Length: 473
Image (cartoon, rainbow, N blue to C red; front, side, top):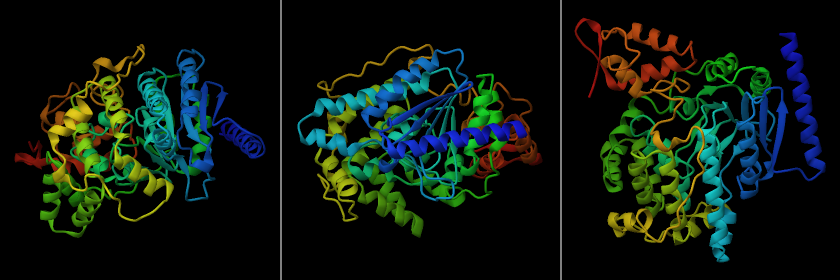
């Protein structure tokens, strides 16, 4: 233990020296570092909340390619130059640099904006396909572009300072960077809820919702980083066990669980935006009314484009999702709502109501949305490089169920085990406690796994004859 602690102290001192140097000299926007088998990216634009720009993308991509091919590299870590743990406010990456995108559009430099999307999405694709374990420390605000460089990783570490959101419908855009892939694959209607409302999740809730895989207190992050760099194996099970050493016990309550979760699935499971709005109104409670008001404050165009994006993305491969998003992005940045949303929200930082065009959902036909944004023959195409682990053929993350167990248990896993259709199925007659013990043991005691499964069982399972679990269809 002394050896590990001493090494952690030395690494922390080295990081502090780098931080002090960056205050006096012009430093790169992304720092690279090698420590034993660890390869570390540090986002280094703290004054801009580490918002992702094309320079950062070009800084990360070639280095990540090189590290992915190195036998000496055992784990890749991405983190941010951020506030010390005692500060409650921090930022991993607060999004893409959409203000610069807007300025390019206004200056009729649309090609430069497309270059950003092309290179950003290519980076997202590389992150999803590399064989090396990739660990993202979401210690602070994680939105938009910050989600794109973390969500496709097998290991996403939330802290008490994590603030996750995909708030694009509030700026006249849509949840891109692979949002069309990961959001529809969250349990139930959670993906629709997060995408349409821009709802914000704090650390523990990010784990319970399936956004993060582990919860580690911010103060333990330096020690965890040191531990990961000491690993001599790039096996994901080994990496997961190392992270679990530093994980914190999660609270037993989930803010989006119980009745709230039932409302989310009931309302956001509808197939159109007007139907979702109507369902929220019928709920008749304060939470539903607040969500309804939030939804109606968003760009109507963004809402309709986002819903169509999620519907299509649920059936597409990862690569095809990125190609679809590239076509949608080049149309969205030319819309009046994008200028209105970015100007009011990010430039003026105003809370005043936005003047959307058109202003109502009724003025936007679903057929026009499909033709203009998803089937436009004039849209430029995105060509993605081929990788060893090319995701062109897969429709779920290779490290998640049913292919892996790096993520928290989800509804599909629980359903298949109860119904006896999982390849890991043992008995098809489970008591609740037997089932909980089994699935938590399979996760090697993963903290939070029991709460996640209990919440799923409350919503989706029934106790049949003899007290055995059954699944509600």
